[in-house]
Amino acid sequence: MATTTDPTGADDVEQTLAAMTSTLIPLVDADWTVAAGGLDWSCWQTAAHVAHDLHAYACQVTAGPREAYLPLDLVVRPGAPPAQLLRAVQTSASLLTLALRSAGPDVRAWHFGLTDAGGFATMGVNEVVVHTWDIARGLGVDFEPPNHLAQKVLARLWAGAPQGPAGRVLLWCNGRVALPDHPREGAWVTPSPAPPRGQDQDW
Image 1 (cartoon, rainbow, N blue to C red):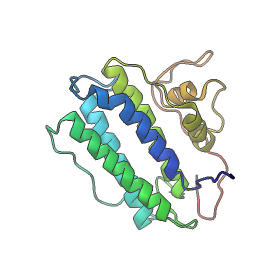
Image 2: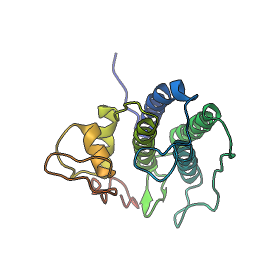
Image 3: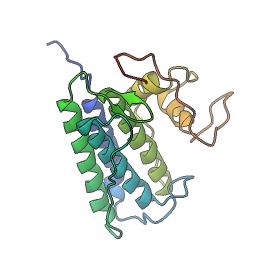
Image 4: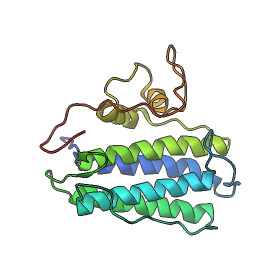
């Protein structure tokens, strides 16, 4: 049977969410007020940030604004338990996948320049896997970005990244780890995206 590809990236977002939830759902009874890895945010705040960003990407893809982000923000109610917080992340991810799958090939929306639906999917994957790594560190468990998903993010956003295991290289690009001959940056590396693939697509 011939395989099909998903140019929107919706399948990648779903796979990334599955990696996040399989890692974090068993930890919902832990103390999520602790710091998420080396971040100033707690694990709870970091997960709420992921829900916010996925929701924002879904809104951008749906509405297609070309000058800025829409003037709205997702707010997770303070005190929501981790299990419900992860439901919020899952819901935002589902909204993004629905938006991606309904987007036509000519859809463009603003994110510090214009991009297509696949660009928002790539950013969503990056947000989820990197912040899952942060939260997992804070809660004392191991998590590595899945290599096949990390490879896609690197190809789109960091085409000139150093060589190495894709998951570790992605963490380096986001300022999380050091690589051989490449000290930890302490902040994310400015993307060096692949060449634009569509009209009005800046990155």
